[in-house]
Image (cartoon, rainbow, N blue to C red; front, side, top):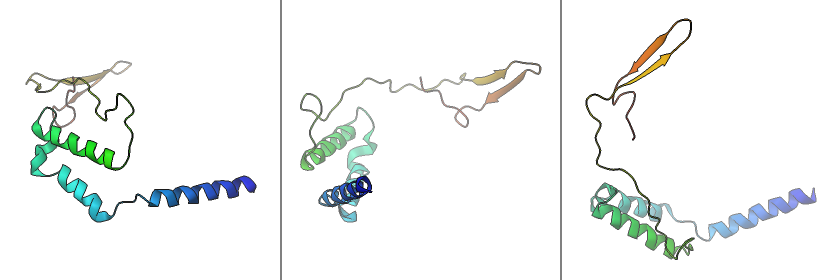
Length: 116
């Protein structure tokens, strides 16, 4: 019983601490409105809009008092492939071997999209 009371007190105390930084609906909507605005151009990787969105999020992290985990930066670089389009000959067929061989052809862009 003492453990249960201690857990309940910790949860209540944690909730009270968390309430000190609860954003109003209006404030949260301002974040969403900025990040979905025409100014950030969809935030597509490699664009000026992506840079603006990243800078906005970084500024909010600082404002909220979040501490960067690595190298005093909130940014993490990573590589990815962009600008590649699937060709007309892309296909996907699933073949199940067994007593009765079954094949299922998937429709491109409706049932599958190649990712790499």
